[in-house]
Image 1 (cartoon, rainbow, N blue to C red):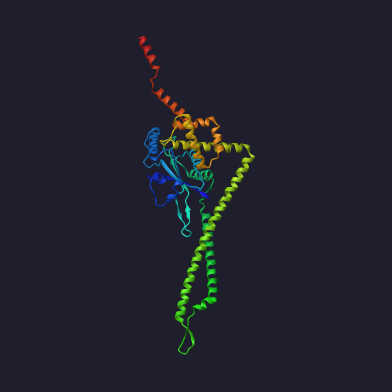
Image 2: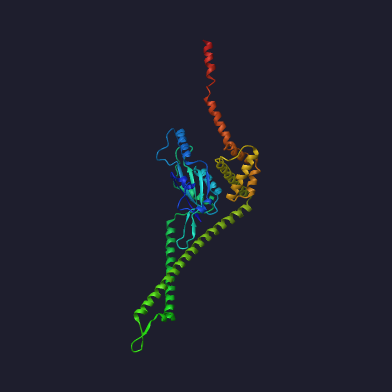
Length: 401
């Protein structure tokens, strides 16, 4: 299955749509509970923060035509987790300086197939991102290869096939599809011809012939009534044939979709087998991938804690309460993202990681962030104090006088 990611200017009503703040006609309400949401900050507050930072950093207001907040719709699989999307957002920040502050997974959108009436879901995620360059205060400037990099990161982090834009291949696929369609039409027409031929040759059509006796007692065919019977019969058979043709097309289409899905799954299995083989034979690769996975779980857990802190009912008082809350949040994250218990065991066995989580749960910031804020505050206080070196100099001058 192919994925794609494309950032555009975020709309003013984006949060209403993404967080389902009102009802929409094109969604299935019974599937809405399957949606997942993560929010670090709302768009209005983020925009104020961006504008203030731009003024502080560059000394100028943010340009009117700037697009500081952008949104991407990402094609995902049914089993794509919030952790997968957090990993993608982390890579976007590391490689392209794009900072995602809202993630929403939608599983309640789609359409009903016209032929089969079956529900065809449109699994996708919305990523809302801060497009500000922290070095300059202005908006990020990306080139064409950066947008290509986005597609690579989406495919890698979501373990999906990268979407391709090769028009030549697409045209070839379209021609092949048309050829198959024509072949199917020809096959249907041949079946219809053979069926009609066999029906006409059968004795059933003899029953449609109307014979009547004339005044001399001879049996003669009533042409008008016979033609009328034939027309009715052909109309019925034609309807049946059209119905069969429609069913045949639907089944053919369904088979093609299944073949594509099977091919995609085969590629996934092959990649996983290759990766598994490398992990089992190379200790360094195994250690690197293990640390990478544990870090991603820690990152997901931290973001979940930040999101939970927006809940006024959060209890983060004494140590026992924090342990209870951390366990509750951890269990929810594990369930939503299919994380094994062993991964949490690795995190909880590391005192530094646990300390970071407790600090984050209590204050909303990690220890390193708190230390940085304290240092900045101390520097600010020190810079606001008068210079002590000038005072003795003035006293010395007065003494000499």
